[in-house]
Amino acid sequence: MSTQQNILLVGGTGRTGRRVLQQLLARGISVRAVVRSRGKLPPEVAGNPNLTVIEASLLSLRDEDLKQHLRGCDAVISCLGHVISLKGIFGAPQDLVTRATMRLCRAVEGLDPPAPVKFILMSSVSVHRPGGLDARRGSLERAFLWGLRGVLPPAMDNQRAADFLLEKIGSANALVQWAVVRPDTLLESEVSEYTMHEGLVNGLFAPGSTNMANVAHFMCELATNPKSWADWNGKLPVVVNASSKST
Ligand SMILES: NC(=O)c1ccc[n+]([C@@H]2O[C@H](COP(=O)([O-])OP(=O)(O)OC[C@H]3O[C@@H](n4cnc5c(N)ncnc54)[C@H](OP(=O)(O)O)[C@@H]3O)[C@@H](O)[C@H]2O)c1
Image (cartoon, rainbow, N blue to C red; front, side, top):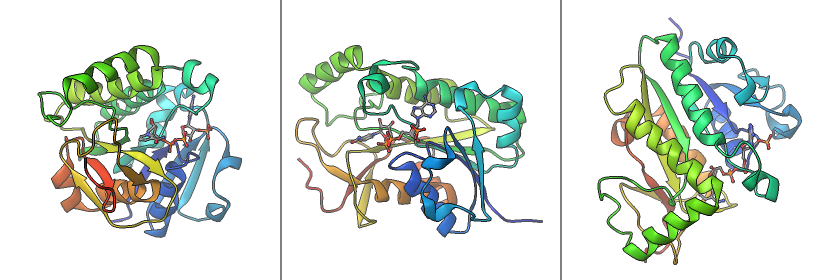
């Protein structure tokens, strides 16, 4: 029986997603990357025998095609995000991350896989963990974020995607398990020491920092290391650089 791990990656042309792709391939994992344009993939991955590129707009794929791409995958990693431009932030689809999350999870459920598939979502520290568990956030910050979600569609989108996993997929789903990774302010830099936390470590107005390469490393660990998955399954870990001072 083959023990080769298969991972479906979306957002693999993005700043963090391309690092996830490179790190997965470096670990010898077989990756299926759904991208809008193959030309935006990092040139180093071209011709890698472990990479299958599906050139398509994720939200436009037919359900049957999406299921076909997901068949046999152990994990799905989403690094989708709204492009930082006026059109990317305010244009359609304003619910990109939520719709992609819902479609991917429902397609996995439709496949009725023999073991639960891991769904790993890149998110943000602006996303709220329910039940008062983000006790670090005071009423002023909560009010500010509430307003932000009203005016900035990506902030609302990230929250709704996390809420879908928490409330609709839940913690006892036999087909899909999930983790929502919450980095602080993203930095371009190599893999370094980083730490993971159940709740927030920095205030919104005195943010910490997280290297994109560290986010990528943590997402790869979640997908491939059973101990890491056991620790963070069904949670919203905050990941920050070890050098980032907590406030
Ligand atoms: N910026 C920060 O400091 C920060 C901090 C914490 C968390 N985050 C969150 O982290 C996530 C990823 O951030 P990032 O900066 O690595 O992302 P990014 O570089 O902006 O990449 C976004 C990815 O999403 C894809 N995408 C965008 N619109 C799409 C659409 N309509 N259909 C299909 N694919 C689409 C892009 O594809 P194309 O290449 O084809 O455009 C790209 O692969 C986001 O959700 C963001 O909110 C950001």
